[in-house]
Length: 348
Image (tube, rainbow, N blue to C red; front, side, top):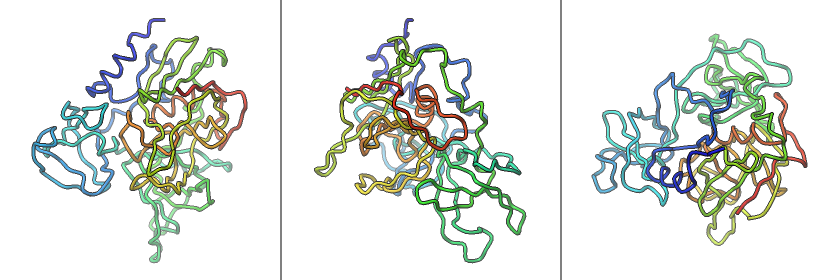
């Protein structure tokens, strides 16, 4: 198979901003629900941090137009190439009628609401947030004393355990997070529930031994292979050295040995403003016994540079592709799955 693009070309296009995410080097799979992009609603940008800046032009020297607050949601017009925002990307976004913002200042999101389910399977159902963010309440949100909540962010995944209607008739899902067992109530229309078909494995006709994954630390890339030919490539963010702590992703040969479609992650070695407690981290494929994994990322958009606690941070659609393509196969509805015969992972 001719991949159609070299690694050098991919790095060039990533720097220019013309790819912006993962890429199939083969033809698209017959079933694309695993990674399809919802184009039915406008593209938006959720601001990561307070004091993010909209500039007059896609240049840091062009002048400041606006300072922003965390979780401001911006209407985006188009991608543009501007000043480098890190060593691998020059990607900016034009904010409709306002100016320009570096791509790594925002999470790309959409606003899509969903028809609530009236009944939830007794074993729970997996869903994903389809709005920029949603408040998840620790108690009945219609009560006067209900003021404890978390934000759940676009693309995060959560286990739904029940349906609840408040005194106003509004429908909420009861979410049970998977670390402490805490329950939260979230507007049902903000979550899309996955069908079993959407969670079926990809490329099942390829023998397990003929699939492999490479994590290239120097290039900050994840590459998937079938029969030794690259079929998928994505920018990534691997671990880094931080304040004297070695959080780097260790080179070596491994196998995917444990998967969870959703995980509440907690870090004591905080390296960012918002990465100490992460609810609903999506599409987690562990490959070391120390907890290093591929997973989706909603708290930064800085792929191509090292900035994780050791895991391999990926764009959420790319992490979902790896999760569904690699071995072991997780049956729909299963919260975790362990196997010693998963897909080979080489970190170089």
